[in-house]
Length: 225
Image 1 (cartoon, rainbow, N blue to C red):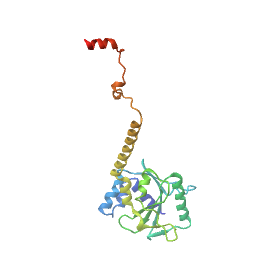
Image 2 (image 1 turned 120 degrees about the horizontal axis):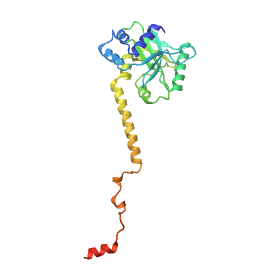
Image 3 (image 1 turned 60 degrees about the vertical axis):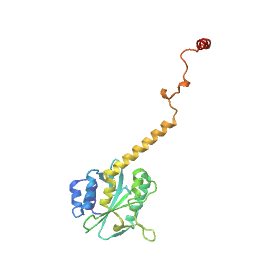
Image 4 (image 1 turned 60 degrees about the horizontal axis):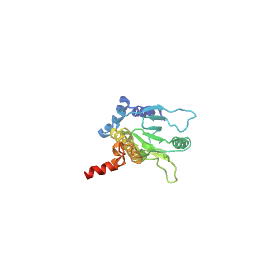
């Protein structure tokens, strides 16, 4: 792919203001609002290693809660069929995703399109967990032809502005933090109820011993008098 489009996506995901403004120039107001969320929760985006590292994609987007290897493709046509080297790239992305329990992504940039010209697809893997497992339901997987071959169909992908709203939403991060807090609280309460109490105030008075032995004869004489 052209380094121009790779650089364009890198600047957007990294939350570079000039890069974001350049991409959203012809977007709708709703698309702009979604895209601007990346300024508050940007990624560290680095170019992946070149030779000898198949499956790493073109870019690696990193943040405290997420990590995505991203393969970038650009076409003027709507569809891009994988064959030869591009098919081997896809298979390598699957292998690395399975090996490292990651969700590799494909970013498809369509040339000559106004508005949001990027579409996002995920490479299907079977062992995702945590936040990636939650995102799996929302990000469309690679489409396939009738004979099961994988291809990119720009019209079936997730718009980049929708992807950014999904992974950069402040509300989403707060919901995740609240969920983690509830899980920790539940575990703490479960452990507390499972262990016997050692609180002194919870020991029944009948279980305590008198300070001095009881004189039975003296007590009977006192009651008769």
